[in-house]
Image (cartoon, rainbow, N blue to C red):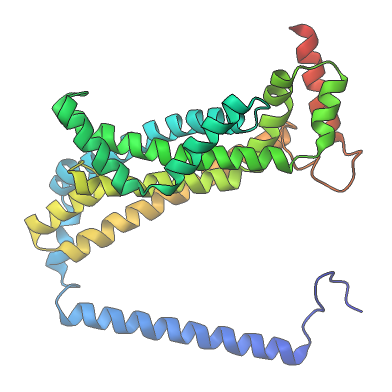
Length: 300
């Protein structure tokens, strides 16, 4: 019997089959890439004059960097507000009080169901009609509001599911040492739940960054709009979109790497839910967490 729990290790024949499938897949991918590049070349999209503008300072200082600044500004504000809204709504959905739990649930389900673009259009029209912001900030305010409401609702569900995934012994131990429900949530459950759900939360942050491109529809000056402006100015729309797409890939990769380091740091500090979620209930991570909370509560 193989040492693997879920399936037996592949034998020599299976390994040859896997190797053949992998080689065939690589060949198909390379052929598809060659076909696409050949079509681009036939249409003149690979000509040097299409890509040369991106080596000049004008394109970067007048278009790409301002667009990148707009994208990062909207994303940064939305991330902060979405995390705040998400935690508040998530905790509200966990409340034992029906008058708190039900309204939070309605808000979360409503804004999760409404398309982000529709919310942006609605908020843009609302802000413009009632002049709630300076005219030059209508688009930014609409983008931030829509991203905050939608992603805050998603984060709320992540927080709720993360708390529910924790062993009940965590909350019971907190109550046993005299913590109130609020302190147990703040000191014991939320830190573990957020750390355990950090990969999903990071994925949602990447979604926020990408969804700022929807602001293009309401004339927000972000990377996608700048790509269109570059394409119209230099007649290289396809090249502009490829460069801007590469910038998005780099930013999202850096965000993922940074989040991975934050997660590793939190786990090293013993604030991870990895310990309590293991099969061994005597794991020290949970005991340290509860003991730390007890010490904090005593000091308060």
